[in-house]
Length: 225
Image (tube, rainbow, N blue to C red; front, side, top):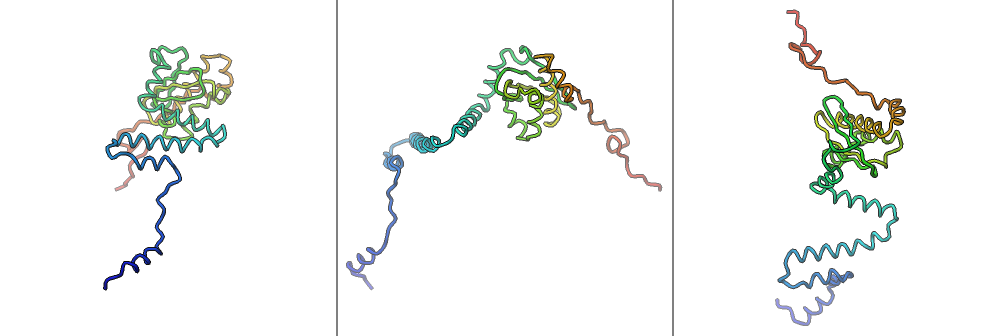
């Protein structure tokens, strides 16, 4: 059965279609891009619009949060090849050419530590300490225990080249290396570090396996017959 034009128009008049207008002018301008515009131009325009939208949001943040956001942005910028280049600039001539160096050992891990005046950053094998130590708070705390003991946690940057062992042993080797480096800076630091046991080399290592045994001391089950 065919519908008349008047009845069809009356039926459509009751429908409410959603509005396609937008409150943000920059989004509307993006929709009117010429068909020949490249994908790169579109992506750059989208990034610019996102930055414009983020500026008023950051403007209302407190000063401390703004500083935290800037520090996170700086850490993100110093990643990969850029971070390696930054560490090499801070250490002209390599680790051996630096003035304040020390070596720390724990289990089978060996850490070469360099201290420089800075803001308390830690770099391990040309990587950020938090990334290298997998964000483990205890291992990250090991690296700064000597500095915290003397109240220098924000006065020195730590550069480390470490190999051998696991992350736990490497973190403790770094702790010993930092303590020894602080003694080189001033012999007055030796007394408080010694009283906390931070200058004592922990000589405990895994005991070797013995022939005929399952492990160092574990024996096979005894059978009488």
